[in-house]
Amino acid sequence: MIVEAGATLAGMLAIRKLAHHAILRGLRAPRLPHDLDLGPPGVAAGSVREQRIPGPRGKTLAGWLVLPAEPLKRPVPAAMVMHGWGANASMMWPVVPPLHQAGFAVLLLDARCHGRSDDDSFSSMPRFAEDIAAGLDWLKRQPGIAADRLAVLGHSVGAAAALLHASRRRDIRGVVSLSAFAHPRELMRRFLCEKRIPYPVLGWYVLQHVQNVIGTDFDAIAPIHTISTVNCPVLVVHGRADAVAPVEDATRIAVQSPQARLLLVDGDHDLREALTPHAAEVVEFLRMACGNGTTSLPLADARDPVHPAG
Image: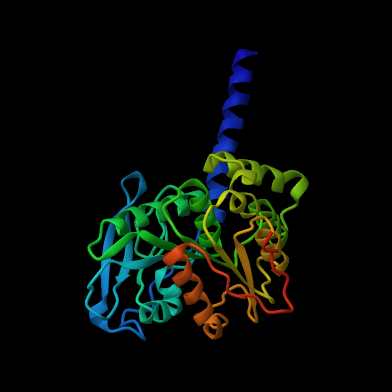
């Protein structure tokens, strides 16, 4: 009897271990190569410096620091940029030239398990937030950078992580959220549906297991919840044709904070091309946020809902 019970327990543990590895393997982000090896466009080569930055858990993060073209006569504001799931720093390059021309320093960072940064046991949105924190801590120590005038711009998971960081620490003056999802549980359920994984049995177990692995409940890190405790201005930018995170997610996020402003653009989840016509608005938002922490700009199209000032 004892032998049979032991064998049953061992079998269950083996199945659970196999399921653990299968889930992590199935959700692992692809590691895409950088596509700026021939030189980044729109910025003088001498302004760009490749960096290796100390990250969490003894890992090293890769990135680029882009400094203003003019000699630094006084500390300048800086924006840290975080890519989305399965992307890398080079894919966020389109936001750099307008910020560079406006006099911002820009740090483009690869999250762990992405780009040229070190690998780790798994990647997650909370770990993206940890990497953002490490990047900001490094950025504060750099000569010529105004440590009290920092902002974060993130895309998708990187946007959710930027809001999570801003809800935990008070070391940034503004957040630009690009294509953020409202709640990770909803995003995961859409993913499982696409993969035709039935939710009532397998899907439910996958979501519970993911929460156990990352060490937190989805509710605690959902942008619709974290933004309510962010004490700096937030610009929520979203594509009207986003098929990954529905455009309604942007509205649901923005209405949770009196400091949030909504900018809907004609684009999908990617936004690299769709953001170009709105670059001046994004730059002005960051300039105002890093200057005095407030903005009264009419950043949304009149057709789009915006959180009321009160």
